[in-house]
Image (cartoon, rainbow, N blue to C red):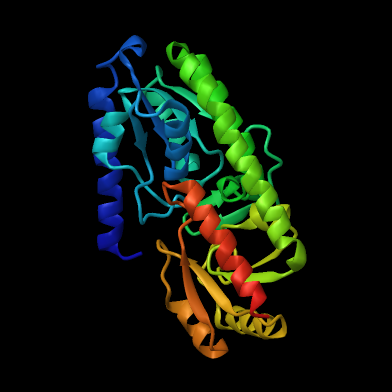
Length: 297
């Protein structure tokens, strides 16, 4: 990082902290009527449970990485209208910012919707300017099976902290859960003929999906870092050996290395968006795209 970039990074943090201190005491807990979540798929869940009855703020804005995102001063200021913060669990943004938010705004209630999920862990992994603590893979929202736990945890937190909406939550929860259970069954049946199949992706966002439905994810990104020439060659050789027909990439990542691999293998690059707000549509699209790529083998 050059000096100019360092300057602007430090300046942005200073501005955010100023925004926090200027608004930290303006609202009491009883005045807070909103909910804040880390990523857009969480907004989908809350809206499915509560409709439009409560405003939901999202911290990681579209097109940004939840690993490295820093909130804007206006986002921090808006946090002070939120009674409840639903964290997704272990993304880099939360590791970097949740303690700061909690220490400045002692009234905000923080609930972790990853509780009870069987987390995929490894050694501590450095991802650019942050570390996934304990090597925890944070992408629990990208598999219908783990998403069911996220939905139940979200429902429980909403019932506890917004009891005035309990009738609406209790009415909508079974419908939402049944949709995701049906999706889990669809995934299981659709991938059964393709058990053990491998797919190639730039950033390893579908680790839980691969584990839950007996697939293997191959990542171009190596431990959160730009891949070396040697690693790219390893990936290319592995892709050739397994007749891989496509590379998946998310919009928030640089596509240049994926393009190099795709050109060498003469395969397509397919854009996916695990951070889409319309979670159920996006996860269905992911299912169809993966199945289509396996059928080309």
